[in-house]
Length: 266
Image (cartoon, rainbow, N blue to C red; front, top):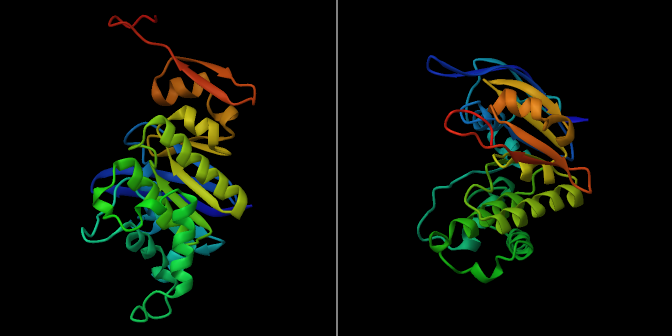
């Protein structure tokens, strides 16, 4: 069953067309990866789903309801977002920053956070091993530590859908594996839907249930990692020569082939 349905979505930056008739359904309670080379429209697609950008043509349905018909607060209770970067208020500590995820649930903004809000926030900080940073200024964290705080804030929002824009870009391999493991664990345990823009194809193959590959603003391929990550698709979309191996769990593993300056394969 699809929780997000996109129909003939078009979007441009000025004269430059980015999304060119996207038709796509995102399955509920799964982790879907959005792949593709730089400039193909991955982040732009996420920001259209969020409503940050207004499409010039097409429809986005969230639980069969037109996205444009949601109020800002209604949408914030349905979708949370983990950006690549976030503007920080310099004086905020980690707990205060994460607590902002509860804003859509406040009955009145002047009432302030309840005890329950604070308990929910601390629960997710604990799950992501961030308790030790609770009173520390968020601006003093490393990129990897802060990325986990961004995920904690999204989880604290307690939405049915989480969108993640290159969540592992600031992380080393161990922390990237840890973060994606937590996302996948949350999807499975809480029945959430996660959509993540990813550049690491092997990481996407390891954790995603479904993959959507974009090329030139259009959906080129959609399916399981094994169906999508083929040598033919990777050559067509990334101009990448590679060998595909399968792990013991039947997960594709991509081994790129280097080229010499003259273009011949090593």
